[in-house]
Image 1 (cartoon, rainbow, N blue to C red):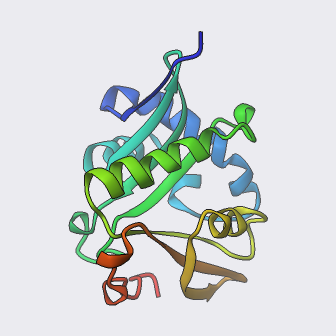
Image 2 (tube, rainbow, N blue to C red):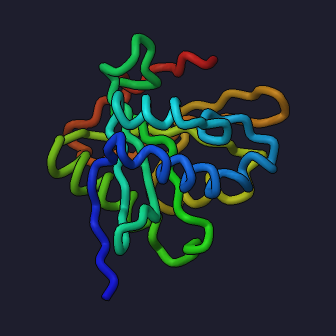
Length: 178
């Protein structure tokens, strides 16, 4: 019987988390995209788990997908005043089965919107070098609110409004990597 469990990652998960992240981001690394996720090591993963909210989807005792939420108070120069998601990864052998969609929906709806009452969330991605990420987020209701060209790529910041009546676009800000 398949049992899927959503939970917050622990430090004990760090080695398996790193293995999942490394395998999922190998193809991104091969595209020449230099993100923290493509170069993560055990210390970075452990720091991520300790300092942010790293969520995992576990199936039968194995991590199969992960996403981290960074909150504005975790940095002196946050990308926005809304939660920022990153390190979104799903085991490559399970690609196309809706697993990542299931975890992202859980984090967007159950954690951020329903529990924490976050009006919106943000993320950053590649618009040119990565062949499908931008379109995936657009299909999920994200909107581009900032673009930055560098090294032949266009980095985009995207937002998804979760609670329209509480959303304030002035809190998005301009990312510090500009």
